Image (cartoon, rainbow, N blue to C red):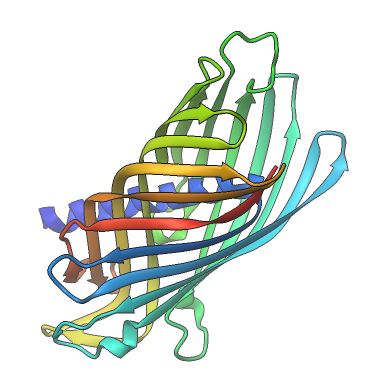
Length: 295
């Protein structure tokens, strides 16, 4: 009972972080990304291909409506022997449709609202209501990063997020804080990522980071594992490492993050989101690289 409660708490935490990630990446116009985690002491491996596209529409000065979409294709290459048909979870699709509106309320503060319906499923059969999830949030942003009157520029984001995968009928809070003490250094504390950055001119940035990644999805073809029904799958990863970012042009960036997982939990779950079978919990190497266009 205690273990199941801890697993549900972790799932709630992960869902909040994923919702916050979506809000932060609304500044990305486009992103193409590849992630890779090999399983320790095994031929199994986890791969994710990701594409994101957002289009901002200026309603009036400093007021924007943003529409966009994000597609994640998750590939689980399971070579070990498992007590179920691994082809049922070989590929997972997570598709977000993003709609957001942001506007200034004063010289210092901006509000933002986001609504993101999601399809997260193996998509081996016809889409049903179990494949749909609703995410959203409201955010207050105090962005002083370009305020020349501030000695040490900063950005503070506070808000409430709602994510259907948590199973909770109410929104959950979060907070994120960024500061740039001088031209060479910056740091960010919050979720889903905390980091310390060192800037080498305008084009090169090196950082040490701790971040959280993962997903939750419905299995359209449920199976019986060890006498229990399996209906969902989730992955939660806490990783630390180093990252490098190169500014190719005014808006185009290339990046590479490499590190080692501090915590990894890949789990098959039942309809109540209780853990049924653990696919992997051994820490491993982590790689994420890609290109992004941001404003």
